[in-house]
Image (cartoon, helix red, strand yellow):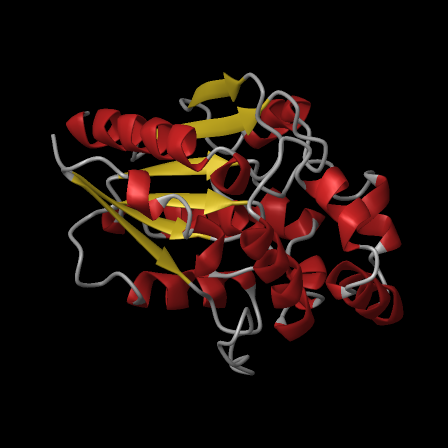
Length: 245
């Protein structure tokens, strides 16, 4: 069974988040990683003022594909959820990998990131070079190639839309999402995810009530960088199941 997968990155990143995965994608599966406006080296678009705007722009990036599986990680998962809720006819399925959306009004980190000054400070801190030996241990406890991790941190410096996501992905947005019933869905989480913990899947599932929940042992938040071969196999297997119905 062949399948096309469109992969959407998390905050601060771009299509390069999936660069290590591409060589391991099995035959019969196409992986197309995209970069949204305002991320990596792609210029910000001032016309994109809501998460639905980003989702619709995303849809235009794969309008040559017939109902692909949409894979979204982090804020990419939130954008994928928005699109699946409003325009399910475009998709053959959706994989929400550690999506942002649960407990946005009570979790500490979203509250800390409520002001532009703090967002700017955090973005600069993540991109800073001197603390990278420490950051590598924190962000990639299972290890990752140095060039990939340097690219990961450098992209935060160039990310113009980093702070915007904390305004667009909020409690009113999440509450306004209509539950997805018309396409198959998977909620994917690593059991060791310390950025967006797997327990958040319960609240997210209210928006994808028929979704299969997959918890992968040994995965932290960035398995596409730490475990690219395993990640490729997992995503390919899920995508094939989704398109097979």
